[in-house]
Length: 264
Image (cartoon, rainbow, N blue to C red):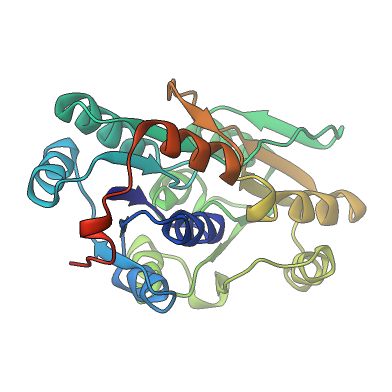
């Protein structure tokens, strides 16, 4: 049985393909809403955050034979905890990650941290749209909210906890955009124009995260963009195609016919 770290649309597709290959699989995600989406596709799930000890307990209790980590490229702690647990339990750890893309634009500033992105946005002033999620929102709110000449638009997934976090940090309701993609370049352009955006901040999430569409829409409108590079993590085994992950599983983890179809 495989312990699978999910959380993105391509992760869900990979989980389904691994299951169709014949492996029992349990996916772990952060929220109950994400878990429910996976269950709709016939996947067994566990909702909640886990540190390395939590992963070790799961592995020991359920008898997982390998970890496939297909979490978001910026879910740094989840990946590190899973790697540590795999080492402690002496089971294979396999990382699937979306391919990275390269971008070149004179209006594009590439940074390596959220703090650096907040500093760069502060220098530009104007109307700043954040498409970086809720987890690090406080970094930007401390630097940018209440600054003269700055309006911050927080664009994120439509979840109640996200709305509550925005409110607790002092974001006016009119500056919160709760919406779920992916979106086309045309949609992004319309959204930027609606708010009069002058700077857009995003993360190097990959093709499935529609980063290119966000950046191209900004470029065509002459909007400054700040791109946060992915965390630099040594995953060991890392693949960017489903075929490579499944081939590695077939070479290292046998399918236990007796356990096939077992859920939680």
